[in-house]
Image (cartoon, rainbow, N blue to C red; front, side):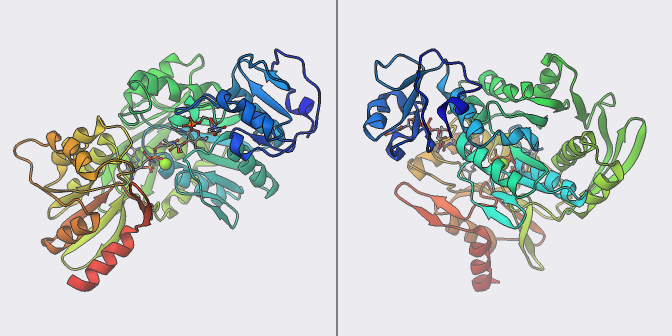
Length: 477
Ligand SMILES: CC(=O)N[C@H]1[C@@H](OP(=O)(O)OP(=O)(O)OC[C@H]2O[C@@H](n3ccc(=O)[nH]c3=O)[C@H](O)[C@@H]2O)O[C@H](CO)[C@@H](O)[C@@H]1O[C@H](C)C(=O)N[C@@H](C)C(=O)N[C@H](CCC(=O)O)C(=O)O
Ligand SMILES: Nc1ncnc2c1ncn2[C@@H]1O[C@H](COP(=O)(O)OP(=O)(O)OP(=O)(O)O)[C@@H](O)[C@H]1O
Ligand SMILES: N[C@H](CCC[C@H](N)C(=O)O)C(=O)O
Ligand SMILES: [Mg+2]
């Protein structure tokens, strides 16, 4: 593609010679002759350091935000935004040809996007999905290294989905993606906000910074949908220039209002009022927060024009979301649930929901991710203690950190009354939980959800809790 075509929507502050661009790259190490290099200031290094390297490797141009005094430089105001726009142009602005739905918030993105895809497909609309678990469209399933991929992969994926005949794409939008402008310039049909509670304070300066990153999404779409039961959602709705579509489990003034919630061990039922009409909704994922996820999906699909009847009957067919409150083993004595809660709020919600329906004890097993928000560690312990009868502290992707040091950050979160044991090795911890299970216990394995790996200092090993539990059960039950 011609450089001039790629640059059509980017303000340029330097002259340039037109040329044919082979690929767009933000990593100098991948540059081959004819590629365009975009210098991005990152978390570890500033890509401007590698401009000379990129030119040496044959870059046809280098996109920079300050004068580097080199040949073939293209001076722009902001290289992250320019990179996103260049990638969009390179793939023919696919977001303008599809109906793109973006869901952001601390918790519930994977759950709601999965449900939305199911509803849209039930309504006969071919839909692509981009999220934490994977990328999906038609029969194609692809791994996704990040919840929201980098701009190049995001635009490339949209293009593939467009070519495969998708009319809709629903994507999780992480705060990292918003802060890094990975999706800058995308045209969204609907943008939705689930909730905001503590996470990622290793990356964001504070909760305000985290909120401002999330807020960026809400100037990019035609229709905004916001959970006004959540305090940050309420604030967002007040701050947006145009009134968004709202939903709530507590405010009858919301456009979509859920009431009369009833929870069982395997589902939720509630009444949903919108436009003066009340409908009964059944959804087979337990937990009060599940009502909010169902409401998010109902609001989005309804504003897209799907009939309420179709939405509600499609919701009733949802079987569950992998690794989200998924029962992975049960016998006459106890059951083992696998869940992805990895924030204080997520843990509190899942344990509260299970406690409300448990006949026996709720036994929670958790660890905290290494190289992630350290301040959430004691808060996750506190959240566990609030609703679990017994806790097993263990490891969850220690990454470059010492697993014992992570646990040392967790333990001060417990009160003196807390009943817990510590098994640093996750398999040992799960074995302990299963060996000591009592009649009617619910053992909840938190944090790994759909993951099939454990990230250690020097390697990533295969680790699937479904397999681990099955192997232990075979030996002990
Ligand atoms: C903290 C973070 O988000 N980092 C992301 C970011 O990398 P970075 O800013 O650290 O990059 P950097 O190493 O400083 O390098 C800056 C630039 O110099 C370039 N470079 C570097 C070296 C060189 O020799 N030549 C060169 O050109 C790099 O390619 C880059 O463009 O940009 C990269 C490319 O897009 C991402 O892969 C990377 O994600 C890392 C792997 C990551 O783990 N991110 C996680 C935290 C994340 O994004 N998570 C969210 C969801 C979390 C959740 O909701 O739970 C997600 O969306 O997945
Ligand atoms: N609406 C919600 N409110 C609070 N907690 C929730 C909600 N939905 C799900 N959870 C809890 O959070 C966990 C993660 O849910 P989910 O994977 O849907 O969130 P996510 O926003 O995609 O997370 P991530 O940031 O890792 O992508 C679930 O396993 C559940 O315990
Ligand atoms: N995608 C999120 C959640 C990971 C959950 C947990 N398994 C962990 O490693 O902390 C992250 O990378 O922060
Ligand atoms: Mg997710």
